[in-house]
Image (tube, rainbow, N blue to C red):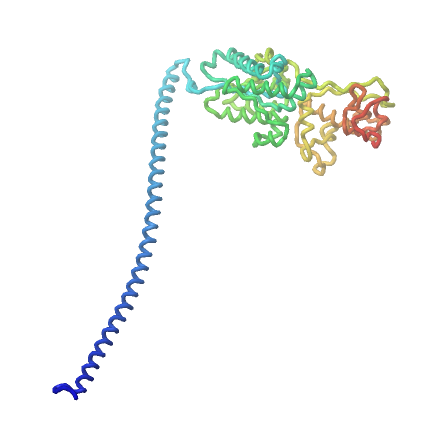
Length: 442
């Protein structure tokens, strides 16, 4: 039985109202959760975007800071250079005004001025008394050279420095000296070069090496038509470079031995600005081609350098009769020239016919090199090397100007010294010993 005033219908209605209220609450909570999830996702995306933008701003700030510092440093450097230029300009104006006023002792190039000495050391060779003393001899030779130049240039040198460059192929020089004066070659020459370079900071012994590529790395822009031999090219390069230097007051060239320098000297002397700045140091007698250029020659090197070029002693001519033609006339040749011609290989090898007989009949079809102006010593070297090839007619050859050999030219102390001699066994004197073990195959 229900209590009075309350019916079952009331309870049902009240229950339904409560149910609707609970459903509404759950729907509200669900909507709130969905909304909160959406807000959270949106905020997460915005936060990620803001973090990325913050990182970019930090990078931009760091870059701007570095750029500002770099600009500040560059500005400071530029300001310092500008101040230096202004100071230099003011000093030059003062010096120029003094010079124009007629004060004889003042020159615009008085500060940091120097005299350049460039020596072709393969042929203008220091005397044996220096070379045999090794490193100590090198230091003494350098001091003697500097003293001689300073004494000769006393009236115009003032306080200028003397920069000395000796350009040399130490291997060829040692080989040549070893043949002639029996020095314990390479060690003595290397010690001498080291001592020479140690004498003063402005003194250098430059070894260009025996490989043509080692030299050519220093020779870019120097034509073989203008300068002939290998060492002439770095000498010319050094001279041209220093003559462009405002502080270089004079250039002394140790090249008196070699006529191949004549075209280069003519080029330098044709310029009014350099004509008075160039002179030649005489050791060996100056080549007539160099004298003809009108260059000033300084006689200061005869106590320092050999007065005669070193030469290769001709192979011994045994007292024998090889046949109807007889013995070929011996040729005396400069060792420097012989070594240089030997080193020309492949496409750089000179054409024997072209240089010994006249223009090569093959022209451009010839495999050997024609576009070169050899010196007289180099012509002799080409002749010596050509004679190492046997004439096809041997002793029956009747051609007076034949450039090939009619008997082996490599005989010394009853031995054929050529390890790959091409001559037949009967083209050697009787009793000859051979380095070429396959001589009978010729």
